[in-house]
Length: 472
Image (cartoon, rainbow, N blue to C red; front, top):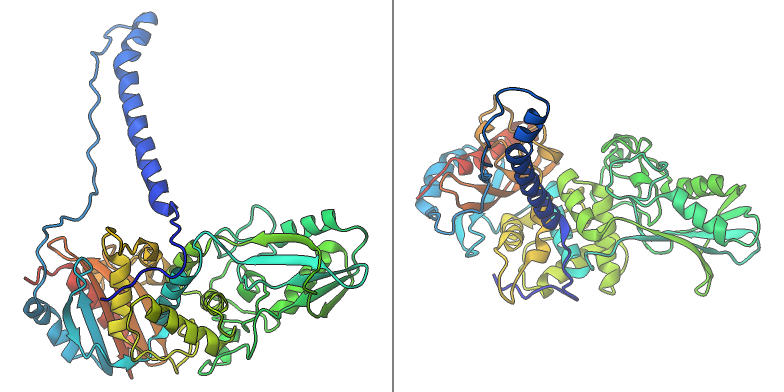
């Protein structure tokens, strides 16, 4: 696929895999411990208490793993086999359809239907944004929100660092974002560093330029809870209720963040302005690492966080921190890494715009790189959050209410992992699945021009068909 490697440093993060490994090791150790306790201490205890019938020593039973790696020798589906399994359903698909199936081990395209044709992707466009973020940003870094001293006594400046996950919730309460930085912690640092009372909070949103909404966005999406004006300073993604993924959002996220900090500091006034370059730093808080935030974007399809990540890509690459600049630098990052985004047109980072266009081929190629086995100098495991963040069919994220037990797609329940995309007359699904022979496959299916109520179940059924297909 011509992949040229990660842009910038190649720092690796232990991440979820290490934690899972530690958990499994702990279970095995505990299992061994319980076995020893039964064979060594139980008979002595029974005898000491004068009870009859001390049981014989019980040998511990070695644990048998229920999950293991996929077999490297699993047969590869043939193009003819996949056409036999998918062809009829594709022919009956309403609207305009494009799709592809790939083998992540070899990178080969196994099946394709008009895969170079660019369609409106909906939220599967986040795959491009997330990949560019992983290629560009240090995975252990995060968004940083700062407070610095103002030009006048008693004034502090809240400098937006692009973090939409910053929360006003108190310690012990969590919203929708993982590991969110807390405004209360920032306020405590400022109070400790300040030399006197604070009466004014200045909000600095100069990190971003340009419009706060993208071309092709529906203004009703703010009220519907799908997005908020994109500025580099907000609390809980602009949500009125931080616990709701999609709920009413504010139209003035930066002002509300400034007001919240002012309350914590006992300040009366909130103004707009900018920090001076040499201003004294009074406090700072950092979000969860970018790698974890990418996983969250993939799982929940959070539009605001996706836009923030796209802006960080633009800033890191020396582009303009605007919708257009972020879109340009997202495609440039993919191109520099050796991917071919030909045909992709982006105007935002979330896929919320009806003016975005992406070929299924691009979605499939990016997910294939993320799922490729880690080996050699061309190792792509730093793209793994694209995969580990994918929702599980019928289990979590944006697939939690799909692949129902009574639906035609039910065979894919728990087996398909995929990013969803839905707008008016737009449906897409891109992810991975293990087929009946134990072969991991990557797929990308897209449809434009027909109602998601009709198309989404059919895309789910296509993915489920792959899970039950030997197709050799």
